[in-house]
Amino acid sequence: QVQLQESGPGLVKPSQTLSLTCSVSGVITRSGSYYWSWIRQPAGKGLEWIGRIYTTGDTKYSSSLKSRVTISVDPLKNQFSLTLTSVTAADTGVYYCARDDKVGFDYWGQGILVTVSS
Amino acid sequence: DIQLTQSPVSLSASIGDRVIITCRASQGIRNDLGWYQHKPGKAPRRLIYAASNLQSGVPSRFAGSGSGTEFTLTISSLQPEDFATYYCLQHNSYPLTFGGGTKVDIK
Image 1: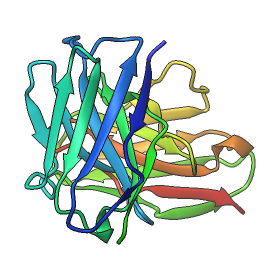
Image 2: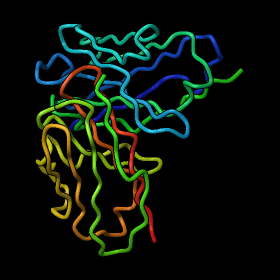
Image 3: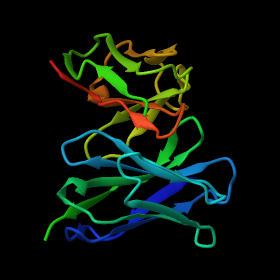
Image 4: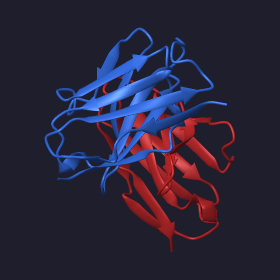
């Protein structure tokens, strides 16, 4: 069955770069039927869409984060990744990767808590 | 960006109650809206897609309706496992946006 799993450091220092990877199984990221997204829940707040990538490499990003975000895909490893630069405490929260079947998110990873602190 | 406004922000209800949550879009989004349930420590779960289509495996007490700018999620008879936060999401145009959430807790 389809599974997604986030991985990466749980602690990042302010002003540094947050990097997370989503490993996908049960479906190939090369499939033209899906987009691959990152979503987060900042501490004490609601869900926030960060951005997505398509198999062609086409990306779309949140307006508020696009100056700091890059999403990439590695079809050989069947993974996609998130990079967020110049992090602050406001970036602390749970980060999810998800599959977008073009009518929303049907499969999600379990989430990974990232804390920004010195 | 399209703004989604959910109401109420929170509500208290009893087992068996009928619960209605509303999501208003800042511009027309056809039926490009879904509803998600989120419990602490778990991944969000899609309940409804394309405004009114029930996700496979989701109980039939959940129902979605609406189009354009006004949407509702109805839980016909609230069950203990339904206490959670509910979010709407629009996928009509980028950037995708979520509503602010509605927390449903026990009265």
